[in-house]
Length: 464
Image 1 (spheres, helix red, strand yellow):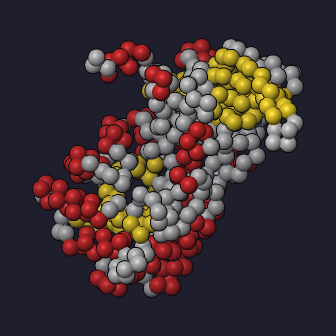
Image 2 (cartoon, helix red, strand yellow; image 1 turned 120 degrees about the vertical axis):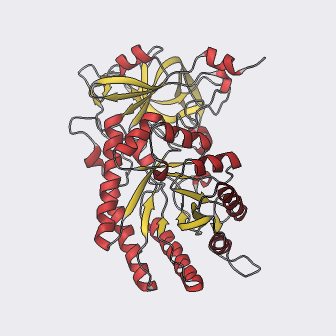
Image 3 (cartoon, one colour; image 1 turned 90 degrees about the vertical axis):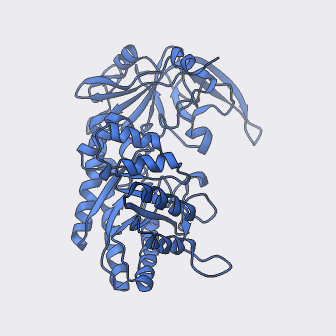
């Protein structure tokens, strides 16, 4: 899925959806629907999701990984990582394109089930699942529960025993392989909350991951499906995945040497990266799939073990580029700034009608985004701008630096690219702002997937 593959010939290119084009007046449209029409009908801020882009990207992962692993003699399951963005419609799209759904909470599980995704095609993650969430997963007969701690092994086993069922489980392990972006989204180094280490501690003995595997085998109400690894987010090459696969497959071989049990499945996680800025690299799933398939086959040959069935969990790489966020410009304020070398320059602060409540990632991770005028063209010279929100925080920055036309003015429509992942999922009601709607565009028409919140919604939760 290179830039050439996903950028429309007559479109505006990455990081926008491939259907994004501009008319002669400079107005942006996505999937045949103009941004000005979207703003007029649905208001701003609004999350806009290109259904066709989502489906195309979902199919690309399924096709690439199925082909690559078929060549080495095994199968693969692609799970859509619902934490990126999960609505009933999105879960349906994922299922219709051949994906399963990975959930990380009882709420995500409920949405996937409401979308008609069969329990057997759902996985449940989480480092601190409640008994209620585990019970809901067991009652829904989910295809797998990814166990994240030694204590959880016993809790799942007990809950399954009470129900007279055998729970299919995987063990999430940390391999020490660190890949991707900000420290807060790296998930495979040792000093963090997820998973169980494949390495023995200072005191020696079995590693925590091995202890969990052995304990599962002792419980008749548990079925050990396999081993799970997730190494981070916004990863743009296959090296980290290949290293993690090597560590997981060696743990699998150690287990069969000790117990005679060769687990059937290995999950290599998600974290596949996308382009956020013009000129950014974007991961292509096909070469990554072939690289991983070759690495898995090589390691299994070296170890003398049969190939496992593989699963992966892309989320951002499917939905991120399919989404944009539309805002209306309010206050525009030039600010004189003194640089480190003592020189001064002007930065234009462009305030919008949303902010960190609808996209917390810049404030949380320093994530970079790109913005452009969406309702018109301009012949004014570009100036250095910072797009900021309306919240009571100086860190309420949506786009830290971007060149915008000098005549950007109140009432202008602004679009921010590549916001399909995590914007809505991580949205809040900070300063009691109602959350924006999620609007799907497809074939020249729009429809609301998740309606805009209202002040009445906020007051309805307040019992006074």
